[in-house]
Image 1 (cartoon, rainbow, N blue to C red):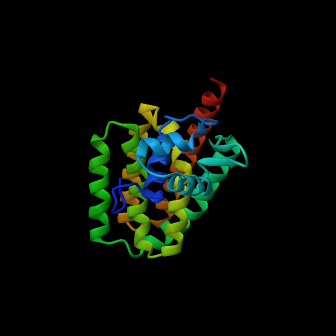
Image 2 (cartoon, rainbow, N blue to C red):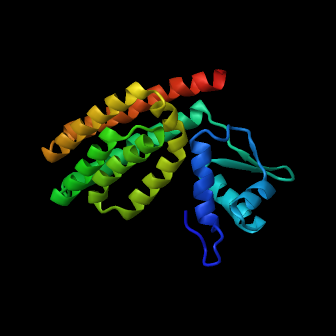
Length: 218
């Protein structure tokens, strides 16, 4: 994690570390985040911690309650559904724009991610590799603003998708679907690539809803 020149954590790097803890389930929804404890742990002042809380609030991970403090945001089935719908709409748009520009260097990048994903054995890496795969395809679109929006959506979706990745059997399903999507892109088969991508996202969304309901009921 990056530090400032004086050896202390910046608010950006601190937000990323806290986000990882929340996404990984170390802090459950509703947990109060104690500013003084976090500042002490990371050897920084309260200011970067407050700034990190604001950043995490903007990405949906933290809820700041006036006069009470910062809490890990709740996870809801409605938010999970909305994020899935947004992924379908925007990722198909990105995919459609990417296929014509997808070249050998893009293929090499995607295959490297698949090779890495095949040997990954932890939820954190599966989650990171999942978005890395899709990002490597969509970047060929050259749509900077679209990619920035998708990046933001992925960050919000990550903690939900990790419920899916905890089901180890799903990793094999996802890997096979990724491989099929890549082959359709390489074949310049736009219709099949979009159909497979939509099915892939919706399937993950359905499993995510089941896993979330189980988590909320426990």
